[in-house]
Length: 179
Image (cartoon, rainbow, N blue to C red; front, side, top):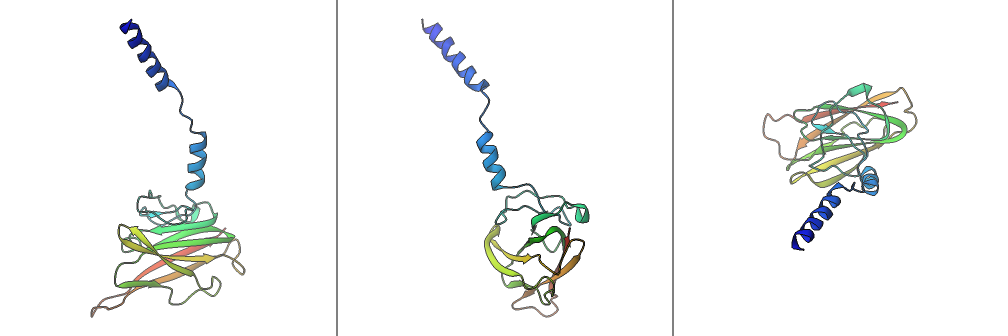
């Protein structure tokens, strides 16, 4: 009798392991939470997704520059602007481009001369970008006169609040291609 109960319990456990897992709702929930990459970047240290804010655990996307497909809202995440000094975002007209750059203590990112076609970016600081380092977020809305086929470059500068003699400002260039 004990042997029969033991064998029955083993069969039940084996049957439970063979059941396919219900991934229909989990897959659709995760697909809506983290869409596939939507913008291109210039180096493998950048991540391009359409999530609301970058996470330090986000996977890196290989950069594919001008040949990447355009998306309505493109996002470019740069984890190391010293190693990666530029990136490219392909976006559809009437969309938006979001750029995240790490804001190290004692420094601040800015756009010294805003592009007249893009206008001034909406900016905010997001805590916990890379470990304890916050991110500086820039968002540009792509609207007239920018249209399909146009391209523009945005030069960003990271200035130290108290520079040492001989320190140079760090620069980053974002190229926006409207497709």
